[in-house]
Image (cartoon, rainbow, N blue to C red):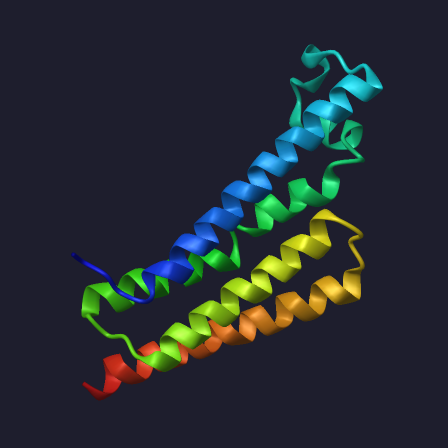
Amino acid sequence: MFYKPLLLPLLAQVLLTFTVWVYLYVRRLLEIRHKGIHPQALQDRSVSQAIFSDSAGPSNNLQNLFEMPLLFYVAVLLSLTLMVQDAMLVRLAWGFVVLRTLHSIVHCSYNRVMHRFVAYAFSCLFLLFIWVRLASYILVN
């Protein structure tokens, strides 16, 4: 069986993305029903952004999950391709995923900007350290 410890945080990050996606669409459907919005009114993206004020946080968070996490996915896949993996990379990967999860929880719930920012900033540091670790393997070997 092919098993690498970095696959678990990768799968957890994917699960987080799909969880936020499902949560967003549940919120959107409830908002459409509650506000009596006709589906045709949503044909233009800029109009729909103004209409969906109640679900803006989850929508923005879903977009965020396709920004910095992209570098996480690439780092994990590069690590697996190069067969480079150690306990530090695994801990950094889990730290990134945990902090991104906290960021999503804040963004999709009470949305306090400074709480969200702290989780985001630390997750970016974890991601930076993942890349520094990978770069050290690549450049030294």
